[in-house]
Length: 114
Image (cartoon, one colour):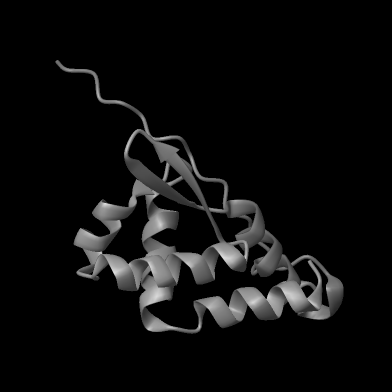
C-alpha cells in the first residue's frame, strides 16, 4: 500500500460514524449489508449515511452493488489488510511478530432446520 492510500483510509476512518459503519460492515462479512439495515443498526439518517458511504468508497474501504432496489455495501477486506500490513510493516524491526495478522472472513453458514 502506498502512503497516500494509507492516509486516505485513515482519514476516512477518523470519524465516529464512518468508523462505526466500517466496523459493522466488517462484522457482516463479505456478503455485506443493505444500506437501510446499516442506517437502522446505527440510527443514522439515510442522507448522512450516503455521505459516509461515499467517503469510505473513495478511500477504497467499501464496495457497493445493487440487488434489486437495494444497495448492498461490503467492507473491502483486501484494503483493510493492506492498511494493517502498512501500519505494522516495520514492527519488531521487520521480524514476524504478533501484530502481523490478516483478516480472512469466513462465509456465513446457513442454519439447517432441525
